[in-house]
Length: 237
Image (cartoon, rainbow, N blue to C red):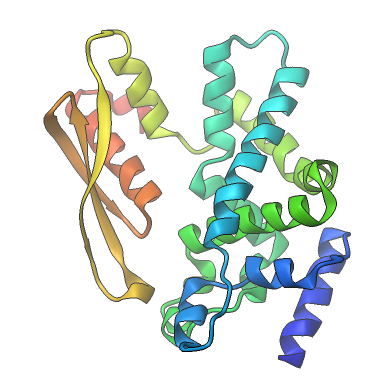
């Protein structure tokens, strides 16, 4: 555990912030696979923090693009935000920080290269945002995020960032107000440390396409991408 403490201090140095509550930082860096291996002892892991961090991130990004890109209409604001906060983008932020090397995870997840998996890195980055918010407030979380958000927004505006297939599909379907999109998890298989999720996208009550991924978010994106292909929307590749 002393090594983990040293790692936390190095992470604080990279972030430029020292936590008053070290427990919240430890939780943000703890993957569920590590907690599962410590049973029956209860170890707090980062899934609840991910939930909060996702909301904080959305507020920070929304305020930034709303304030700095005053000529963008609402639809474009939503598209830019979706691009910046997508899983692949957040995983890229985590890699820049070297966040994967600071995580506590189970042996199985470690052996399956979990430290470099997009879903785990993106979730950990959101958990870290939440930890900063809880410990230092919104200004602290925003100050940490700005060096990542500003260039990512600029790239999204230029159209050179990862396509958010769900948003593209939603915009096409919304042209007919009677049509409704939904996503359903239809299967998951594999051990906890190497699980694959399968999601179907429905147009009204009809299944249109299926996608798979290492997280539900990724599977939804791939299902939307497959639906776009079936609709002949190859330009969004």
